[in-house]
Image (tube, rainbow, N blue to C red):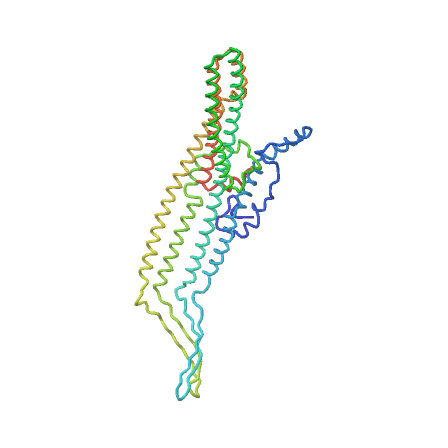
Length: 440
């Protein structure tokens, strides 16, 4: 199973090549009715089809798999697969011997010809190979962690785009319903005005409300188109195959869980691994200051005599002592240490802020639901009935309709912000992939 996508897995495990061949990416292509398009069936089959459709489109696991499949099908993840192949080969290269043997031959033209062959080998006296191998492992781990971060960011952008798309779609539906209502109202007022039942001022107010609503529709349509474009950019499509249940956005986070994530997560691991990489570079820089001897053995002829050759050489770090490289490597270690502390500070701030935002917004949503309940459900019909019976004036009727619309919009905006805050919490604590994977 794909270690990058398995919840609770160790982060530094299998190459992405194997990962992308199994697990999430092999989720079958979803072929069901699109949730944001109307279902047109024969009347005799409509009830059964609608029930099946609701079961599919309101399933948390089905929605999560669909979202994962969409995101993981993007070209970015194919590039990640190739990047892991590069990192794997580079890691193997760093594990190889530092020095290859050398084969040499010589010939001296004199009265008695002298010639021979020699093989020489530079001795890795201070074990530079192990230092290179450790650096290669650190580099590989960095690429793997970077891919984890890319996955978390890509999934978060997909979730943000999904939430914004649903919000803008709902807001557009409200605006269009309001337009239909106000259009019917203006027609009815025109008839009543001609009959002398209402004054001209009431009709004018209805027209003004309709013109304001037209502006709102235009702005909402722009928001909807932008959300659609962002959704296509994030998941490669604007067709939504499923929706989660509403309860998926209502979660409990305790203080202990917040503390647990303060010093963990992919960002902290990535910064720590960068520090390890800097330390590995400093060790190699120190080894470069030291010299390794080269030993050679050979055989030859000097006239009529056989000769055995032995040679030893030691480089002299006189013109270049490699001290500057070592000093730079030490400074890089210090820089990485401070960068780790800065990342820890930022992650701590992100986690605490996202926790506070989500808990407060969830409390506001629950308070709104408790306050409003089902009051808005039949309020439109009730207001219209009272207006037609003359219990309320046209101006009060229009004002009440506006208040009702504002309440519906506020509910959508508040829920959307709460959902975004939940995604921000998951992103700050590096849990998006695991959360989606474990949804049931």
